[in-house]
Image 1: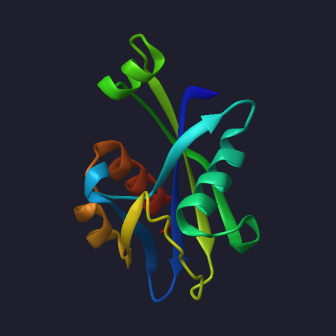
Image 2: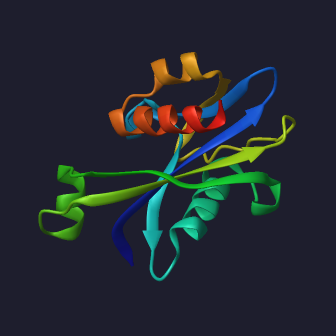
Length: 146
């Protein structure tokens, strides 16, 4: 069962500079760029949800993560779609994580979610993100990595 709790997970790697993985939602689901996002199910912890959603959306397994930045950003939001899903006015709490992977990490997108991905530096990634909460999370992570 779905709870009104979301996770975000920014996948990053270190080349000459830090690069962040962005994925483009398929047209029917909005056609915008984002990081890993998803819901927390049943009695799942937010970290377990981040691992699950990362694997489902990118093919990256838990064993492929070489560094974790936990709970570095939180926010709350409300949308009509969640109000309909839960049958009442619902404020969604989002917890952000970041997973560092090796530079040669393979990405396998879930085609019912995303149709394209890019590794981008901070400056280019922040320009592509649509939602303010995603931009704010990326800003906070970037501050921690510098």
